[in-house]
Image (cartoon, rainbow, N blue to C red):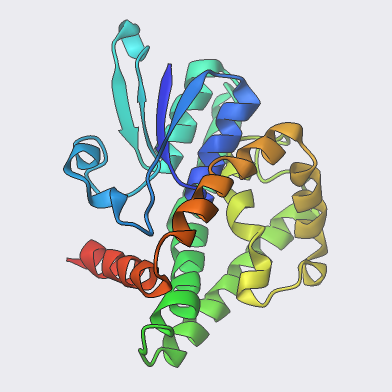
Amino acid sequence: MIELYTWPTPNGVKVHIMLEETGLEYNVHPINIQKGDQFDPEFLKFSPNNRMPAMIDTDGPGGEPISLFESGAMLIYLGEKTGMFYPTDDRLRYETICWVMFQMGGVGPMLGQNNHFRMYAKDMGHEVQYAVDRYSNETRRLYGVVDKRLADNDWLAAGQYTIADMATFPWLRLNERFDIELDEFPNIKRWHDAIDARPAVAKGKEILVEYREKANAELDPKEIQSNMFGAAQFAQR
């Protein structure tokens, strides 16, 4: 059984989608990052970088439990465990890993910083126009990289729908947050619509969304902003 510790952010959604696509049984444990659950000592025991998602597979290698953090590593693990959406051919597998790492090292951090400075830092009264401009430009550049890749490929890697697509889709679907119209990137739009139409993706996107809305309604907006801004400072120490 997969015990999944998560929240409906792009990094959480990518693992939600993979679990739904594979049909593995899993239990969801909400980690409300707007409330600060990611700093709970019990959570830090298996997610030492105070980030979600994280998971425990009670039936890991050799039938023994294993814990994992970092969403990209979780996708690779689940791909290997199930033999699904993760090519066994060496060349195609490494091509897939390259695009997963592209998401982990580029798309996630850059779009995440863009979102942070647009949504939270400004509301906390910080002067951040330089940061907004920097990360907005990098966000648009990364959309361009993906659009160029998809001009001659239906999917990001291996000529098939893989964990690379699952990793990247939850970030690029937030284009409106970054003042980007998908019509500007027609290849991404085609790819986005194909993924968005998958039933498992629809289910994965909705996990904990109602829970988040209800939980956040009970918090003062300034408390949410403080927790999110504090989390970013904490992570830099």
